[in-house]
Length: 142
Image 1 (cartoon, one colour):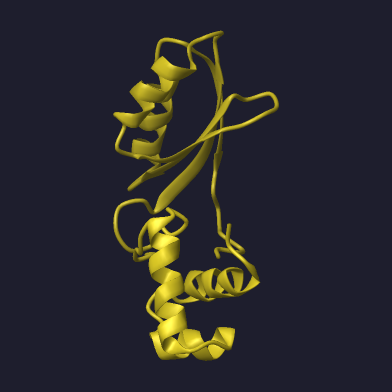
Image 2 (cartoon, rainbow, N blue to C red; image 1 turned 90 degrees about the vertical axis):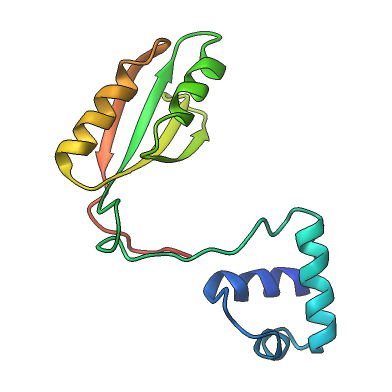
C-alpha cells in the first residue's frame, strides 16, 4: 500500500512521467536512491504499470472521442467484453454501477468512423442499449 511519500511521487509522475530522479527526489523530499527504490517497488507491486506518451487530440488517430454507455443483458457481460476488446477504437472499458453496465471510451479519426464504431458496439449480441456522448473538450487530464 503506497504511503504519503509514494502518493506524492505518483502525483509527480502523473504530472511529468519523464521527470528525472533528481527532480522527483527534490519534489518528494527524499534522496535519489530512495526515490529509485520506491519506483522499483511500486513497479514490482503493480502500482505503476508503465509509462506512456499522451498525445494532444489533434495528433494521431482518435481526434473524435466518445463515452459509450452500454446496457448489457443478464449474464452477458463477459461475452460483450470479449467482443469490445476486438474493436481497436475502444480504448478503455469500465464496469460501472447505475443505468449502464459498461462505459467504453472510444477514439476514431472522423465522426463517420465513430458512428460506425457505435453502431458496431450496439450490434454486439448481449448489448441491449447504448447511449453515446461525443467529447467536445477535456478540461482536466491528470
